[in-house]
Image (cartoon, rainbow, N blue to C red):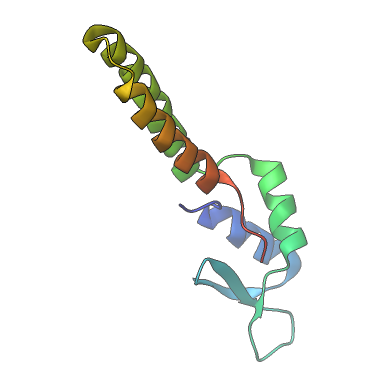
Length: 105
């Protein structure tokens, strides 16, 4: 799941003079001003980007799928008179909620 929109990272790099950003292993890297070696984009900056922009398109899609799954499981559980669909939906929603957490770099 991508927690940041590419445009958000590009805008931050443009504002702060960083160039040629790229993503590797769930971490964003870029060349700071007057540097020849790329450095990870500071986690404070990523946190600020996230606070300003909210959920990315990926995160919104996963939230919608989780919500749809929960509603579908509730209806299925009622129709089938079985708690199994709710248990499966709970497990799926728990995984999605865990993936929504932004990893600390």
